[in-house]
Image (cartoon, rainbow, N blue to C red):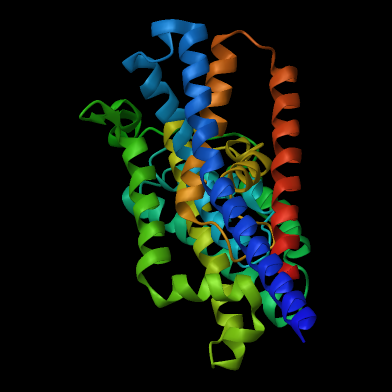
Length: 339
C-alpha cells in the first residue's frame, strides 16, 4: 500500500514538475522577442555609435516600420486562427494602384480625392472577404485561395493603369509624406492608428476572443454556438482592410501607383509575425507580439544597411531568422497539441 502511495506521489510530482517547466518555457518564449529587440538595439548602438540612435535615424526606422506593421497586423489575425494569407503582395499593389488612378493623377481626369482612397481600401476589404468566403464555403485551403488572389489582384492592378504607372498630382497627397506631428511623420501615425484599432479589436471585443478560441480548437467554440465560419470570413476581411490601407499608404509615400508597391511584403510580414511569438498553429500571440516582431525586422535591416552589409547577406539573414522562428513555433505548437 505504501509502495502504491509512493508511486502515485512520484507521478504527481513528475506531472507538477512538467507543468512548471512548461510554464517557465512559455514565459521565456513570451519575453524572448523583447530581449532580442533590446539586445539588437544595444549592439547596433555600440557598433554604429550616435548615428544609430540619432533622431534622424529613429524617424527613418519608424518610416521603414509603418507599412510592414500594417501588413503584419492584418496577417496576425489570419495566423491566429491557424490559416495563412498569401495574397499580400498582389492585394497591396492593387489597392495602391487603384488609389493612384482615382485621385488627381497624370494618366486620367479622375479627381475623387479622399473618396478615391476609401474606394481603394474597400477593394482590399472586398478581396479579403471573397478569400474568406471561398475558403470557408468551398473548403479550399486558405493558402491556395489567397495565392490565386495574389495573382488576380496583381492583374487587376496592372489593368487599372494600363502598364503606365500614374503619378499622384493631388496637392495634399503630394505634401502628406513630408508632413509630421511632434516630429513623427503623418504616415507613421496612420500605422499607429491602425495598430490601436487592431489592439482594441483583439482585447476589447467578443470577435477578438473568438479569434483566440477558433485558433486554439475550433470544435470548442462551435459546440457553444459561435459561428466559426463567420469568424474566419471576418478575419480575412479585416486582413484585407489592413492590406488596403498599406497599399494606399505605399502609393502616397511613393507618389505613384504601381503593382510593385506590394512586392516582397509577404514573407517579411510572415517572418515578423512568427518572430514576435504568434504561433503558426493558431491560438497564441497577437498584436503586441507583431509590434515587437516588426520592430526586430526593421531595426535589424536598418542596422545592417548602416553597416553597409550587402542585400544578399541581408536576405540570407532573413532566411535564417524565418527558419529559427518557425522551428520554435512548431515546437510550441507540438507542446500545445500534446497537452
